[in-house]
Image (cartoon, rainbow, N blue to C red):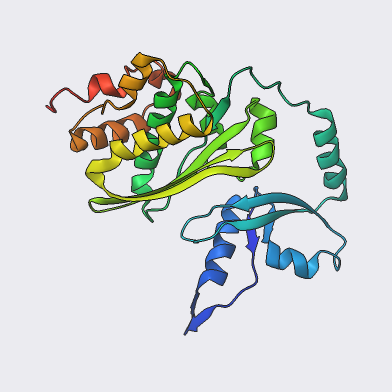
Length: 277
């Protein structure tokens, strides 16, 4: 049996046998980012032990984790001395894919911050809708859903994704759904520089979800200076459905399907205008 370990330094609250607080919560999130049998530590821990232990560390960059307001910088502990040399060798031997002639982008799976794993399908559905929407723009090179979702739940750096997929831009974000309200954060990153080109937070009624998707798409078009054809411009503001219950059922059903069967499914806008049985 292999265990994952997350270590953090911070204040905790003690009540009897129970401890909680951000110090504990961050450690729990780091545990989820570690490989089986591995250890991840926060930057606070790294600063304390970097020069005091005969270990090497791989910088995983800043990670957005569940229920923590700010991104956390994470380091993976290289327990075997050979791992350090292997990390360097990987970086030297892995050649980055060439960038396409037109702006290239990958939409990484949006994080579900709802505190309810049952809502995972909703954040995945929003991610897939955004991929579908921007894939219709001829001026963009868009990575497929199958390649994008390989990074779901993994701690990755923008430059790593850029190198592996041959894209320059990354769209990432998070979704928090509660009752009839939804909060969506999104940020567009230039992976070659690490700079944010655009970032926004939306606090809306659930019925405005499609308007938010349209706005995110428009922000990408503007930031990357993509020229739309007349038909693309008209289609960009066309809501796939006004039936949110149907949309919710569609996302839930899609999440249970194997990836190979999803390829055979008609696009959401062709399904959601039909009345529910």
